[in-house]
Length: 245
Image (cartoon, rainbow, N blue to C red; front, side):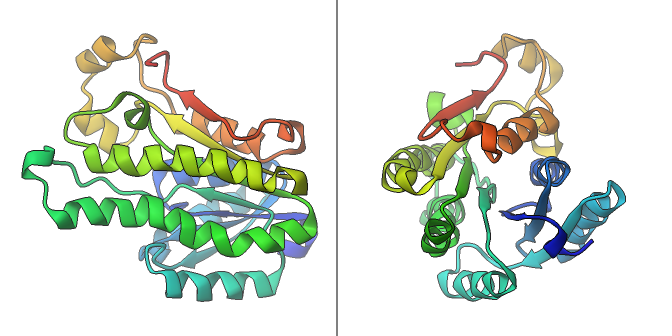
């Protein structure tokens, strides 16, 4: 299917990963043409695109470094030349964990460059185009670590918590233009990273629901927030964490 058969287009940064892939599939099933982003692993984005096509949806792949402002601006300009972008899901993020006493400046800056500066680099160029079309959905993926803190993740928690304040402020700036800005903060979600860090006994200790969440449970909320029914939900930080807090 071509993008023209779908009225709205969504960009999912980090769409080539496990959570990003689930979000991309959920948005496509809801009628979006999805632009699945990867940093360098374009083949992983292509795999998500193929899955969307097999399910009857519409999608394309793209690759660029969200922490590089100039590269990101050029990539977005090319995408906007193809048509408007109605929703952006800021899902790109990395971990580089260490106790802060032993954390290098490179570890600190690298995590913040992707999660926080990447949010600005991707979102800011899309705001005026969204304003002109009087519709926009901006959803950023945070973490329960930004709400509760987590040992060894001062850099990650700082970057994600900054998204909360930025999103609440941006929601106030853009609400009159039909644009909503929200944050989804997952807890322990099934996947390679969580499986390594959270064995079953640890999950039972820290998660009141006694289980890890699924990428699909997070994706369902993101897809809802990008739809017409969520037009009055704005400036919110919504946890998907099984009762962790």
